[in-house]
Length: 301
Image 1 (cartoon, rainbow, N blue to C red):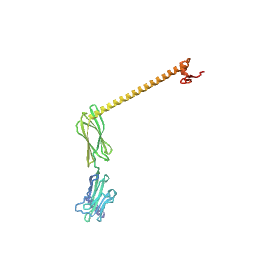
Image 2: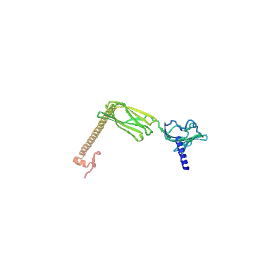
Image 3: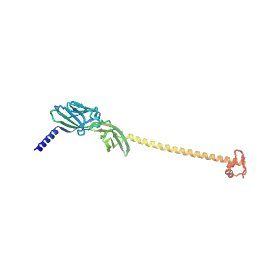
Image 4: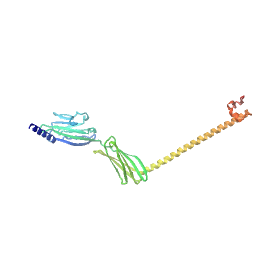
């Protein structure tokens, strides 16, 4: 009998707890804004003691005990908490993404059972317009292909939505990156002279932002022709430099050869003037023994 009474008491206690426990409520908010976490107590509850905590109700962050409010239990929330004693709600100021977690509240009064509740808070970054740029372009076989990149800075887990203001567009590839920090889109459009506006929208369930860009293959074709023209000019310039260099070297070599020949002819004439019986080969072979400038011929054995 005692066991049966104990069992009934435990069941009654669990039913009372279940009736006063709100589970699974989720609230979303944005960074740098404020949010009020409701306790869920009835309007006529009039709490006398309140405890807000984290991590399965083991780490206190704000309390009302014996009429005294304390909201400096946890360093992360220093100067950012306001405990409303009339309804046991908790206000968090200047939200951060680190504030995303589950919060537990217990409220007491003199006439009612303990009231318990838990609220999950998810804090999102406020999105700025994404950066939209063209990574690659090509224009082949009357088909224009673009490769775009849409990215957001310092924000994770963002959803990307692409849109083209034209029906003449073929979507080839849409690849989000790790943690959805960027999204790369590859498309083709026909005809090539069509000007199309593309839109990249980013969302994180709380805020949205977008960027647009208008592109046309006309500019790409012009740039391609200009690139080819520059290559041709560069080729002929290099060819011109090579030809000029070759002509300069050839001319200098011819000049050097003429100077050498002139010096040899002058030497032979001088040698022949002072050494009548000397042959040409003898003059060249014994050039170092002949002092032509001194107008004298050394004695030769």
